[in-house]
Image (cartoon, rainbow, N blue to C red; front, side, top):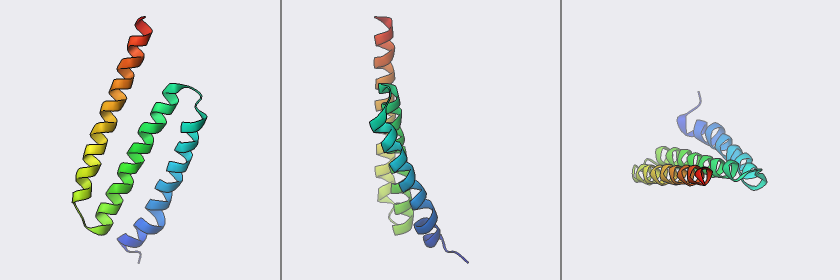
Length: 91
């Protein structure tokens, strides 16, 4: 029987690491600025997943507060960029 710690170590964390690498490729290749912003938002979201897995794995709830703050900053950054793009279309 597989334990939760082994499942995190051998399944969840490798999937998250592979997804970060693939999103970094999208971040550098582009082709448009919008694609890069979405890739950056996805990297932050994946980072939140990694922080959450580490918090559960190490039994330290304080990391969940960090994940919540990071999610809020990522959301506000995405909204600000969408507002900026919308303002550019109006001009």
